[in-house]
Structures are given as C-alpha cells and as structure tokens.
Image 1 (spheres, rainbow, N blue to C red):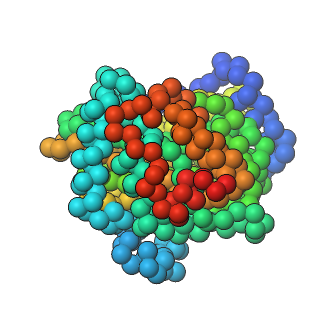
Image 2 (cartoon, helix red, strand yellow; image 1 turned 120 degrees about the horizontal axis):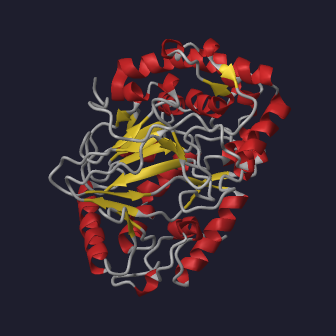
Length: 433
C-alpha cells in the first residue's frame, strides 16, 4: 500500500496505568470536564467516535497516501483552491502544494542555508545533541526569502481562509511566525518525533477557552465538531504550560517548505489524514480504561468509564501530545500513518494544528534532507501581539520568546536583516501592527 510504514519504528508506547499520578493539573482537568458535560455525554461521544473511526481508518488504509490532497502552486496562486480542493483539505486536514518556490530558486536557497549553518555552527544551537539536524536559527536570509516569497504569502492567506470566524474579529492576512530549519544528513536515525499533535497537549483539557473549542465532542455530539471554526479558538491559550515544544501562537496550518527532495524512508514526514474524528478520539481517550481481554480492545462498549485519577496517555505538560498503538488502538496508527508522496525542492507540506503527524525515523537517501518550518498564521489579536514583539526582539538580536533561545542572530556571519522585504512581506512580519 503506497505510503504505509513497512516496519513500525521503535517509537515509545505509552503506559495507560497512571494510577499513582497525583498531578493536580491532570486531576482538575478531568474533574472539570466531567462536571461540566457529564459521564453520559462522554460515554455517548466515545461510542460514536470509535464507530466513526472504523470507516475512517478503512478509507485511509484503502487509499494509502493517495488520500492526501496535492495541489499546484502555479494554479492556486492565481485562482485559489477549487471547491473540491477545499472540501478535500478540510476532510483530511492536510495538503501538499507543489512548486511554491521555483526549483532552481529552492536549490540556491538550500546552498545558502547550508553555508549559513556551517559558518555559524559554533554559535547556533541544534538538536538532538548526538546527531544535530534541527537548527535553532530564526532570522537567516534564506528563511526570510522563503517566508516573504509572493507565492508563499499568497498560499498562507489561502490556507488561513479555510478557517472561518463569524465574529469578524480575525483576518486571513498572514503573519510570519519564526520557526527553525532542519538539515538532516543521510543515514541518520531520528526517533524524537513519533506520532504526535502539537498546540498544547494538556492545555486542550485544562485551559477553559481551549476546552470550549471542543465542547460539541464533550457534549456527546462529536459529529457537530467544526475543526475549522476560529471564533473561540482565536482566544484559546494553548501554551498554558510554558515549554519550548509549545507555540503561544495559533498556527492554522503547520508547514514544511522543502529545500531538498525527500521521500518515504528518506527523511520524509508522515501524516494521519483525518482531523475531526482523530482529535475527538484523543480528547475522549483519558476518560476510558481498556478491557482486560486483548480480544475486546476494539469494542468500544467494553471500555469502562474512568472518573478518577489522571490517566492521560501520551500527555506530558511540557511536551507535544503523543500517541501510540497501545494507548490509542482505534486509530490503527500502524496502518494509517502515511508517508507523504515524494517531495521536491520548493514543494510545501501543510497540516492542521490538530493533525497527528510524525517525522520519518529513517533517512536512507544519499543527500541531506532539509526543510524550513513555515506555518500559516492568521491575523488575530493574540497573534498580532506576539508577532509584533517577535519583530522587536529580532531587530534587537533576541531570539523569539517561544524558542527560549539566547543567541544574538544579528551577530551571526551572513545576517542581513529585513532591508529587502516587500511591503506585503513587511506587513506579514509585523512592521505595521
């Protein structure tokens, strides 16, 4: 089946027995949801979601990575997404947009980025420590050239526009959120980012406004959850527990812009191409204990409601939300985590902020695999506040506060600042906020 993992990696499995946990944040979050929505509604939602996952997973397995939408930048930059593309992206929560940066230009930018890293290797931070590939640089010339490219800005606006907000308090006009880059050598194994969902882990349950985003699920009507509604989410605090793995800014879509080719088992990315049902399952999972008999695991009616304790499998306050085969069996992760189709330099990969994804643990290719992490961020009051401060920090030589980095990038060899930005780019970088 195209896209499927040929052999499940040594990603962690998450122990479901947290009976000894005494963390009051977990206990309070579970108690607050049960008191607000009631056990009956949670149980009703659990049964419905697990039933829906049966057909969702069957479809993903049948289609393989052909279920992932692929669009052409050449068309959509001029015409926008077609109605079919919009529907497809909203159903799966992800998309590939090819040719956002012209190939020759992407090749040139990679050469520039690689040299920039080499010239400043003794000053910049990178992880993992043993095999550095994730570089904590945020304001390099190559990154800014990609972020400010007219095709990229247009695409970010179109992606933001897939969300809606009837309050009229937000805009699809993009703002630039500083994130790092990856430059991964061949043969380098990487197990640090197995199946996970960003944007806050425990915050989804513990932060009252964030919890309200998912109230249809907790109310017993998961079918009414609108994964594209920004009205409440624009005000949600997703970094209630501050940590470098958490973004304080709402990213409508997280994104990879490829600077080199990649494909399955060559440092690609894996996506779980469903957003609404998957996030509903994740949110309900802490309220239910699995049956003792392994043969009954996939029968949702055999799971028992867990009112006490603080069992949130794969959830740590300072980390992304992780998932595993044993802790989230109805997702059938081993069959449904899909490598994206082959990617060329200049292509982009996008996924909804609630989408499960993973970094390919293998890199069997012959060349470095490099991407710039560039998200689609809409204009909201919260994002404006952060982006304005991010700009002021960057101009003063401070790295963005979400990164918690301490490197003065204005002193790095090759730093150029923002003198070449267009007016549209300056607006997206926060100059006119």
